[in-house]
Image (cartoon, rainbow, N blue to C red):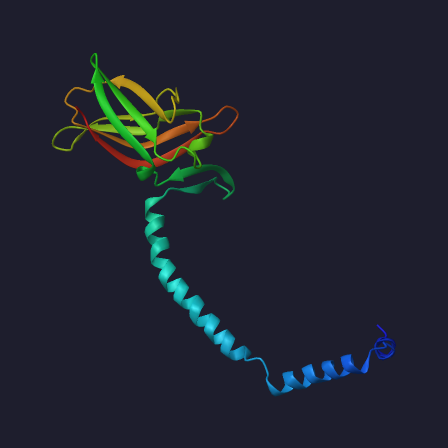
Amino acid sequence: MDFYGIKENVESIHMSEHTRRRIIQNLEHRKEHPVMKKHYRKSLTIAAALALCLALPLGVGAAGKHGYFRDILGWNRAIVGIAYENATDEISVTARTENGSLLVTARFLMPESLPYREEEALALGRYYFTDAAGNRIADFVGSDPVPFSGNSATFQMKLVEGAHTLHIESFVGSKKADQDLTISGNWEIILP
């Protein structure tokens, strides 16, 4: 780059005496009153630290309430799937008996958010029954998928004799042409 050529080009710019004086005055003013960069940096650093201190507890509290996606890793540490965890507060589960069978209804509380807005059907993943003393009396894995009716799905299952509480550890969401999504949480329903 030819700096001398640039200098000659800049010096060849014609300007009025008034403009030349105004530019010189602005330059002299900046020399006399320098910008207080250190002061601004300190203020910004303090403000950022204060904002972080105030926002961190809110973020930690919110993280405990909402679900999150987790990668499923294969033997070679490659991602082979995805799961959604901590969904207890995002799905409401109720149960009722009808004609000797148990009807369990799972309702999405946030149907417009991910992953719920993408799912077309829902199945039970892992679930078990306990008696009144809290002892496991029956364990199950999987059920047939049930299509959604609005933002809920109702499962029909046999009523286990002596069962007092139904514990659901996971649901499995499905959508045509997509991999099934395990939705984990901890739901306890006292049976009617």
